[in-house]
Length: 369
Ligand code: SF4
Ligand code: SF4
Image (cartoon, rainbow, N blue to C red; front, side, top):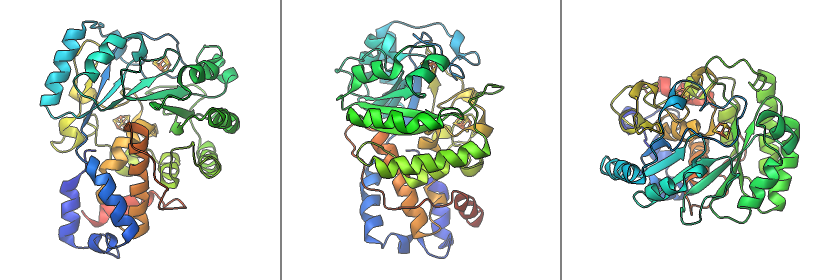
């Protein structure tokens, strides 16, 4: 969690970012208790690693197979990866996100990483089970029901096979990506996952630069997605890991970058927070500062990706101190982020029951300038 504390300090110096001070906000017992809980994780510093450029499926709109990162030569030497993670640990990285293409194809490299940095998450399509010895969170991507997955991801019985691999596995969180086309099937998929005791969170399809396909959201599908997210959150509280503010932030007509100013190096070459510490390594162990973010080659103007928000929104505590309810919304977002990404962190009941307008963050940012 690379908080922009520099700006938060400025807000405190100004004494007042909105009608109340931050000190007054912290006097609310529910806020004080949750803030004390989540601030224990402020030490998390993430970077991401493409473990391989191989994948066992090929999805329409995949961000990995855009741009030149897919052409990196695979380094398959576990010792070289172990050395990299030792160096990363010395650099202050405490949380790894292992992605690719498909990390489950290189279990020995995942083991090498886990041996050095024991906190992290793996982004997988869930068709091949990762050995239990790699005790990271495992995010399993779901893009709709089996009929849709067969069409868009060209894989048969995808959900069924993912559930076979991961039902009952405490590491697993199923990540349902809302596209413009799969809204109507979401409830059925979440019901199926709930019937198998699986946890699920939500993602938004975010187009890659130049993508012209049919999955991109429209203002209408964004508004509809928000309602579907909120109703599923209310109906499946034991299974859905999300918050009303998460729904609002990810379905706003403005992208995450437009709302919160992305703090990854690709958009923030500054020397504070993620802009300083974050690296996105390719499968040949190289990285490029100008291209580094958690979803490279995604169009920033359409970025609503759950992984992007997990860093961008959490970093902007300073833009959520305009009122007690706005800060509750941020705490719910952070609590959701921790429950989705950190193995062993259990989601708490949300403090806010209705979404706070994400545009308030823009108002607070203007007020503390
Ligand atoms: S499973 Fe993931 S990496 Fe593989 S093609 Fe699909 S989106 Fe890309
Ligand atoms: S794609 Fe998203 S996460 Fe990446 S730089 Fe753009 S806004 Fe940031």
